[in-house]
Each structure stands twice: as structure tokens, then as C-alpha cells.
Length: 243
Length: 189
Ligand SMILES: [Fe+2]
Image 1 (spheres, rainbow over the protein chains, first blue to last red):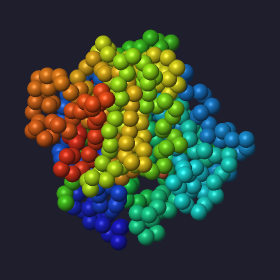
Image 2: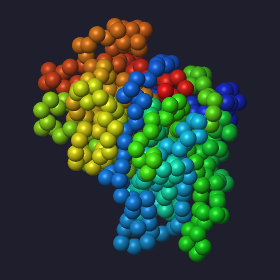
Image 3: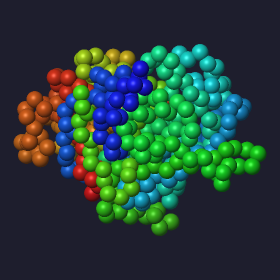
Image 4: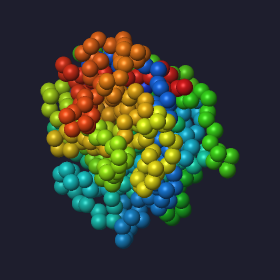
């Protein structure tokens, strides 16, 4: 029934929108939480154009490896997820913060409000962060998250995903999204993913399996690039760009 | 109901779509003193706080607010240290709402006209930008506020509480729906 609603909305709606519809009734929680007024277009001022700055005092290198936070190895398929954070003109977003969180291999979050009767993993918090390098690359080592049920409708299951929080060079590029895995049969049924009505835009949330990233007898590899909205037309050089 | 038109697609690389922050971000995004841009005992410290509500007027207990602001002299800091809060003023903070939908920052009043605000929540499929203007300034001169109807304008101006704090409620929907913003060229400069 929810699948029916999704199909109807896809038929009726514009199909060339990059961003999700905020009003997407198949995602029940959006009903009372989407604005109904038109967004006011406004020229950003300085405070909106300057993103916060993060550095090595904020984030330690071990935080990018979600498999070494416990006293032992987490259960699951070990994987490397890496890609570049770019602006709309393809320029790298350098030395910027990337935060991730995810369920464990059984589809369970550590979160106190997660009621899914699947096991917690004492060796896995599902939380990580890193800074992009000078070319905009981020890289995490983690385990593959499991799908999990939620209460949106009968027998609703979220496709496996990793939540990503991203900053650009401008505060107006601030973004939070979810990365999915290729070939997941739950993607077609998921109201959150399907709230993006343009199929090409939806595809941009799906990582690519990359055998070049797969490490012999260690971990499978996935590539996922992120493009943030807009860019600065005049890049502001920082001293460390020349380092 | 047809959805409102979204921002136009930009030339260049198409942007990666946003998705909801979901209900399970609390172990990942909040951190110690995330909402303290300055320590509470700092001379001149002010609280910026409010409640996030949905279209039925119910508090939203799983929202996340971030602010970006100038310092008291109007300069926007570009210094690291926000995640450790062991030094200078970074001009950025983060606060999750509590079970009654409340958020609170401890900061200084910016030298500029407003705090830049971004809102995330479970049920909200993409982030929303808005502004919390300081009350008592010449708001008619502001290019955004001056073109808004009085009821809409009111949603963007923080209220000075008797204790000196600044109250800025966010209404995601409804009669008092907050004015949310989009930026030309996705915020390109
Ligand atoms: Fe999730």
C-alpha cells in the first residue's frame, strides 16, 4: 500500500528534482514536520558563507576506524568506504569534517530508543568521524550495517545505510544524508529513499562496489562521492593549501 | 497535495540529495559542550534557546539545531576547536532538542544582525536553513525582513526574555510556521 502511494507520487510529481520532497506522505513522520510556505530565497551573508573550521585538535585519526573502538573485533563484513567531498564545480572540500553513524551487522543501533530485538555488539558503537584530506578524500573502515525494521507501516524495513553528516566551504552547504549499498532490494520499498523522485538523483546515494578498494583477505571496498550544493566562485586560499 | 517547487538544479555537478537525520543520531552528533560556544560563566554570555514544534504544535524531541555566528565584534571566526571547546570562540555550535523539544546554546551576541541556523529532525527529509535575528535592531533595513509580511517576519526575530536570554522557537509547520530560506546557486558566493 505504501508502495502504491510512492508509485502514484512518482507519476504525479516532477521527476527532475535533486533533493527529496519535504512533503512525502508515504514517510508518515514527514506529515507534520514539513514546511508549507515557499522557501524565501535570500543572498547569503558572510556568516552563512563561511563554514566552521575543524582540525586535528578536533578529530583523531583512529576515529575513522569503527572496527577498533572496542576491546575486540565487531561481528560483520568488514568494509572500507571512501570517496571525495566536492562542491558543485567539482572542487575538493579540503580538511573538512565528515561524521558517520550506523546500525551494527544485525541492524541494531546502540541508541537507547532502538527497540529492534536484534543483538547489540559489545565491540561496535557505529559512530565515526574524520577530516577530508587535501584532495577532499574521506575514508572509513567499518562493518556492513544490517537492514532494520521501523514503524512507518506494516513490515517496513530500512535498507542498509550509513548516515553521513557533511560540511562544505560555506555554511549554506551543510548537509546530512544517507549512503546505501548497491543491489539492495529494500531500496525500492523505502519511503525515505523514494522521497527523492528523480531516479538519477536517488542513484547518487548508492555507493559503488570497487574491487580496487577491496583489500586482500581483509575488507571489501565501496566508493561513494558527495557533491555539496553550490560553491564559492572565488576560492579562498588557506595557508595549508600550499603545504 | 502537490509539493512546493524545490530549488532549481544548478549548472555543474548535480548535488547529492539530503536525507533525514533520523531518530538515532544522539550517540553520534551531540558531544560534550556542543552547545557552549562560550563557557556559561563568561562575561557577556547569553543563552539562545527555544522549542522546536511540529504542525500540531507538539514539541519535536528529535531535532538538531546548529548555529553559525560572528563574534561580538562582528568577525566570523575560522578557527578549529569546536569539537573540543578548549580554547577560543569558533562561532559554531550544535544542540539536540530534549524530550520537551527544547534546545539551548550559551554564546555571545553576534556583532552581525543574526545567527545563521540550520534545522535537522526525524521526519524532516532535508535540512532547513533559517535566521535568528537579534531584537531591537533596525529590522526595516534588512533586505530579507523588509520584504516579509509582519507575521512571517516575527518568526525570524528572537525575543528578549526577562532574564536577558534570547528565545527563538522553530515551527516546522502551522500558523506560526518559521520562514525557511534557500540560497541562489545553492549558496555560491
Ligand atoms: Fe538509520
